[in-house]
Length: 627
Ligand code: M6R
Image (cartoon, rainbow, N blue to C red; front, side, top):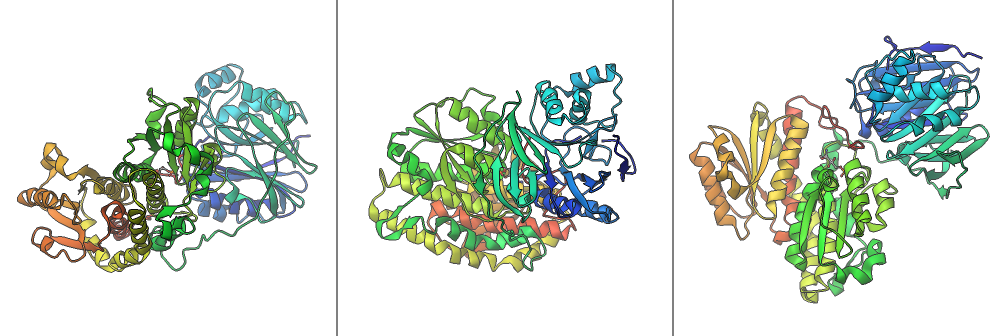
């Protein structure tokens, strides 16, 4: 029986890729549950969104729109019925612009199949050509639409699982999908390959989502689908199977629904809230892990490799973006404290070279979200080559956390702002703990360990003192907002801080910024400096201080405007810099935890001064789940 379709899109055409998906069957209103779920997944993309829901009498309604979930919620307000089953999607465009037409769900041209997708169908051009030759009419520019059309091609009434498995056998690429058939209201088929999918179960409730934060309060149990596994949800419960349609038994875990600390707590933006949370979040990272009397740390997550820590002759750290900058600080920390050679690799490059790693290598994989596709691929490559892998992850139960085998959670709490701030400082804190652990096995004495821990424990209070300068930093923002270029310089431990400061500024304010080792400036970037160009120099008072002052003079000689980050008490730097912000004194290996904070605040306030939204910058997503 054909089911009437009511399309609420003004233009009825459709695909996407790096995204978040939710599916729900239950007694509550599916429309509300799905939209709430999408809000939790907005970090995965926010350029367009949509959902399809079945009412109790089997009518399907489709609602999609360009823009954020708030726009979808507004548009969906007119859907006043009670809906008991549905699928939804928030998109970050890869194939096809962020238009309503390309937004999900996609409906097959025969109107029988509705589908949402997270991932990339790599052979979509060929598949589309083949389907078009058979007379299928495509509406969107997306890779996803071929999946909906393919499932429809194989679909026989009542046999959705079979149609989905047949379709998936023809595709190459990554997917996390949720599929419904218009003649099977109340059934959702989900499948995963490369893109995460978790299934939630509760009293009269069956659902699936890209991550557990999107599961509704009714859920009390969950399980994760592995690659090439499918799940079929309906009023009778769930069945899991392989692509060959062979039944699979899953380990079901208890799930405690938690209301996320997702409100802004009085701050105008999550970014500012998260910057101000840092004194607490770094303490949360080391609390319970430090043994001050022994100058030692206890890292339960590394217990599985405790006996072998001594055997690793080298360490490779891999990550992307801000996590990669934390990895660079980690390199300095581990080499300085423990004397073990460390290399830092962009996860996005890792598997496309021929990295020299093997059983003697410990690979540390850093990811806030635990879902970054490039980082996950690097983790798998490292394992495949026989390395021992440990994760440094924020989101518990995320794919990287689960696949790492061992590691440590940074306990930073939910990071909502796309620009990562508190995760960076917690990652560096976790790396400091690992460095200390390794150092105490070799060249660091107990008393040195004790003073390192004392310094660590004093950091939250020192960070509070840095945050007290927020209004002075805000006062500078107006001056900056008209700039189109900016340079960030630092040496040693502060070179990664310069990189991170520049990334923060460009990703939220859209001002072009470059981070450089200060001494490298004269090898090229100095050509950029002209009258009034802002140059942020991270110049705390450590070994190379005098050399950094010389670098500042080189900038001044070319009339650049110098904003210096200096050590408290260093007033003489005012003779060289135009503007100075101070951070309390601390041992050098821990100083990035303080010097990065003014740079985070600077990026935030400049963005606000420009009238932009720092929490959701254009073209970005919090978690990059495609290659
Ligand atoms: O979740 P991950 O730490 O793996 O994310 C890595 C990067 O995508 C992320 O740090 C990105 O660079 C942020 N937008 C930086 O603020």
